Image 1: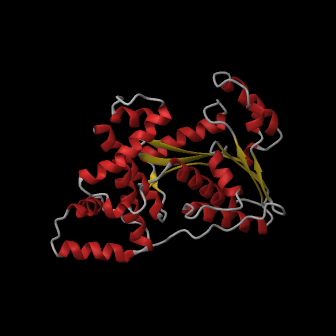
Image 2: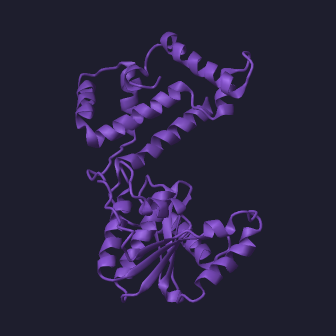
Image 3: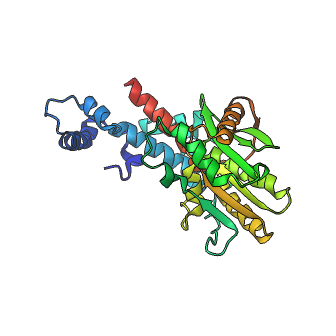
Length: 313
């Protein structure tokens, strides 16, 4: 139903209702609701966007992609603006222009592969199994002991704790080490996932200045570790993902040993809690950590506006 919605999203309601009825019917079947159930209630219960909002979000994302990947589309819209076109089709573009979205000319290439079969980079997510089955309210009492027993022989100076945080739509990251601390803010838009990767990248920059040894980067971002370990990176991976892989490969060639360790968040592991506090400070008042902003990071703007519009209606 949404294929080509960029072209027909501004169609008259008499045409649009044909598609909406299909969605309403499907939701009634999926939820087991009666025919008399209010259509807006169906969408809220299912957590499914109304079609108009969904099409608006997809169309907005297309404009963001075109800014980098297909600028001719943007040029055509600019030409229509010069011709003073006032059709309903143009409303989306005027909204897009008002947001002043400006993706970096840089577009992430496929991130470099890491040869994990013969590498000095290690991934440790073993705590997932060790805390499995432990109730959430008990984990803060149990997890610190599990972590301590696993790493009690590691020199504290070799351990770096990283974390990302988002407060009031401001995003930052923090790094804690016995001798080094850091907190920075990321330019909007930025997700916590990007902040977690930025923290790992900054830590590798610190490690590069230290003597060759075995260093541990401890993070509560499982998605970051899995993305770095994955053999197939996403189509448009975040900027930091490629930079981290390059950095790890360089450090590996220089005989550094790097272990990326996952720990559960908010489980009273001291280093992780301190990194979390630093990340909050970075989000609110830290200096900007400069980076190219890939176009897909701006998708959060369209999603936020879409949800806001749905909530209002």
